[in-house]
Length: 59
Image: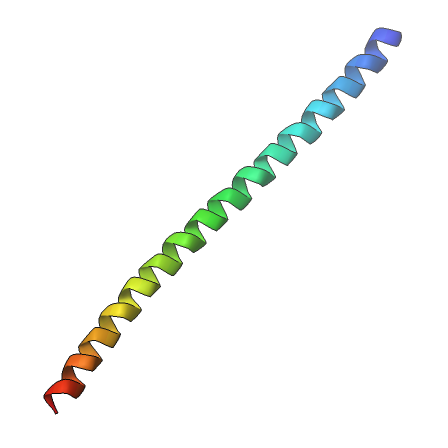
């Protein structure tokens, strides 16, 4: 009886730990994706601004 109670608590604790780790991994992947997107957009924005500056200098 006592062994099954401890096993149940251990299983619950492990399940909670796995959920927490999965959530942490999801958040890290989301942040890395957002960072990559922001860098990509920043690079594209820089290129567009350079092109606009070139056009304005020629005019």
